Length: 104
Image 1 (cartoon, rainbow, N blue to C red):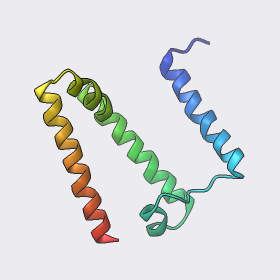
Image 2: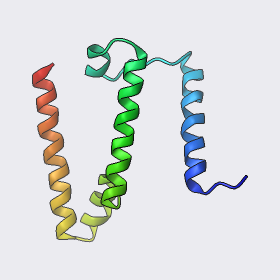
Image 3: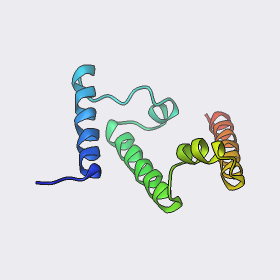
Image 4: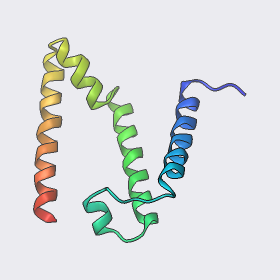
């Protein structure tokens, strides 16, 4: 059975999650702030986190990279497009964090 880096990455995610749960004493989704206060039950939180992860992966694939990579490499090369994109990422994050804080 031959894996490329994606297969090993997936295995690492699953094994890392199980190792964390083992060290922690079982699966527990506390520490996600408003998410754990708003939704009851670990199943709902797991579904929300899974959907969010898929959306982030889809966005990174569609954009040809992630926001961190764009911010680090693009801005270090003084790319105007990367500077504008990074400013947009940060601006959006600030607005969303204030909106979440206002709603909770």
